[in-house]
Length: 188
Image 1 (tube, rainbow, N blue to C red):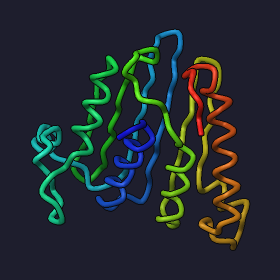
Image 2: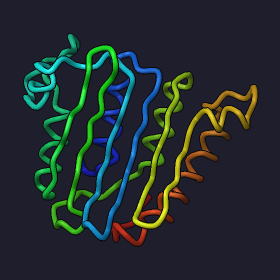
Image 3: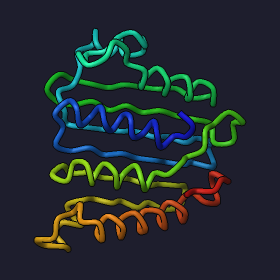
Image 4: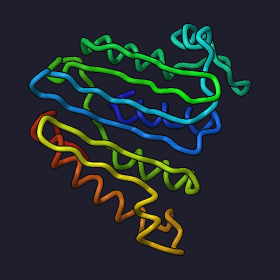
């Protein structure tokens, strides 16, 4: 995967597949600690401790539609290459949190990518789910919640193209404000 937003999308898609009704994604850039943290938390089926141990194996998957599960192993490779780690916390029936860390200034850290597209694609594809996005740096925090949008738009579907376009533009602006100077890359 060429950027971190694609890893984010893959993990969020896993959350949808396991029956989640709520998915929270977070991106935290702590320049003082030289640490970029990305996480996805869901309220899906969760995993047993044995399954958590096996998800790093690219030839292990719980899906019957394919023989390999590359998402977590690829995320682990991206994190390790950038001086970071991946942590998985899960409990059967309560959900899963996948957290990955990266050194901000590491030469092998992948660019952030188009997080706004990742979030809006998820909303478009699963308009009945609740999505949250936390953006945080050393000085500020921003939280996007689909329930807040629904409250403002009333009967208009959240996946209406004008609503999605507005959300995407708003998220792009916030991501640029929060991370543009910290991650030293162009955020599309």
